[in-house]
Length: 400
Image (cartoon, rainbow, N blue to C red; front, side, top):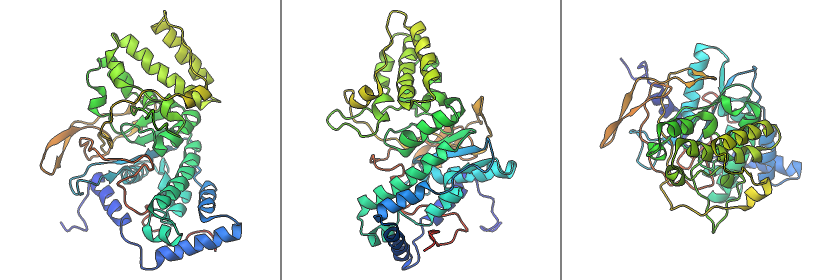
C-alpha cells in the first residue's frame, strides 16, 4: 500500500495537520498580511493591536445548529515522532475528532479554528515571526497580540456553545485561555454538567486519594472549576480565577475522610461559581447546602468576589508543568455519562516503556510529558503559525 493511500490513525492525521500548519509562509506573505493589518488599523484610527483584537471579537463563531458538540483544547500530548521538547497540539486532535464526528453525523460537531471566524483569524498567521516583526513587534509582543486575539474569539465561541463541550486537556492550568476565558463562559452557557474532558487527570494528582475522591476529581463538572497550581504570594496573578479555583491536593490528602475531602473540593467549586456571578446563584446555594451537610460543625462563609481577587494563598513548592494526561480517538461522548472508556491501548515512545491509555480517538494516551509552560499562552510548544484550514486562502478577509 502506498503512503498516499495508507489509512492513518487519528493521531497520525493530527500530526500531519500540525506539520502542514508549521510550514513557512511564502516569501513576502507575512509582510503583506502585516501591511494590510496596518492599513486597516490606520483607517479605523486604531493601533494594529487594538484593531486586531476588535476584529477578532466581531468574527463569526456562532454554532450553525442548536445543540452541536463543541471542541475546546489547550496544550498538547507527547508524540514519538516529535522532538522531546515538542508536543502534538491538542488543536489538531480536536480537528480530527470534529471531522470524525461529522462523518458519523453530519453537522454534529465543531471546533474553534474550523468556524468561519476561526478560519479568518487563522489567515492572519499572528503567531508567525514575519507577521509580528513587520507589525513592529518583538516575539513577546507578537505572542501577546496573538493570544489576546484568539482569546477574544474563543470567549465568543464558548458563549455560543449550547451543547456538549468536549475539552482536549487533562489538568487545567490557571493562566490558560481554556481555564480563564472559556471555562467561565461554558459554565454559564451550557452548564458544568455538559463539560467533558477527553484526557484523564494525571495520576500524580489523584495518587493517595480514596476512590470516592478520585472519582469526584475526575468528574467533568468539577474539573471545569478547579486547578492545582498555587499562586505566587510574591507575584500575585492578574487572572481573577487563579486564586478562587486553586485546590491544594496535598492538603486534600491530609483530610481524614472522603466526606471531608468532598467538602473541600465543593468549597473550591462554590468559590469559582460565586466568581462566575449571574446565572450561577442556584449552583452556589446547592453547593453550600451540601457542604453544610458534610461539615455540620463548620459555618460556610464564601469570600466576596473582591476578596477572592485580593487573596493569594501561600505558594506551594514549584513543580513541573504537565501538558495533558491521556487522550485517544474514537468514542462518542454522551452529555449525561461523559466519554465512554475504550480498552487499554499502548503507544510506543522513543527509549521508554509503552503506556496504557483510554479515551476517545484510536490513538493512545501517553504519559503527560513535562513542559515548561509560561503563563502567557496555551500553546508554548505549538507550531509558530496559527493553524489555517487545509483549503483556506491567504486573503486576510479584512476587505482592504
